[in-house]
Length: 195
Image 1 (cartoon, rainbow, N blue to C red):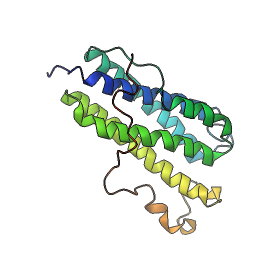
Image 2 (cartoon, rainbow, N blue to C red):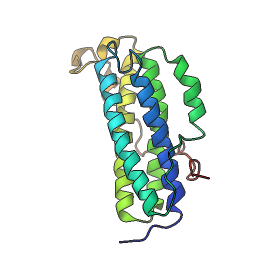
Image 3 (spheres, rainbow, N blue to C red):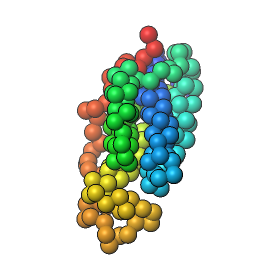
């Protein structure tokens, strides 16, 4: 097995800080009646619930990889985006706001993982982080689709199964707007490093 390089630690800690923030944010959004409560749209509620589970797995995997690389596990939320979430949470007033806030964070997480995975020195860790990048990218695609449907002002379109005849033409493609996955919003590799 390849020994981890010291450069892996800040990458893993930054990824962990984003996962911590996203998991905490999803939990906060679940607590809202229109996020995870009784008046929530089922696809939004389901996305938050499955996201919390997936982020819990990411948290565990990243912590194990950080320890194996000789680093301290990052349990604090990302320092750049935590204030953004703190400011945004009180303004969340409906499912569109839930989707918008989640999308902002998922986009940063997915882009960060996609950009940094190639710099990890251990093939098993690269595979694991790539799997979490793919999961985040899937959630981003779903959030883009949900946001597009909610932007029509017709929340009834956000349903499982959907009324295919009522969906706007872009509904099938809005979740995949990029030919190549962008990384310009990726957090710097040391942004969430434990100091």
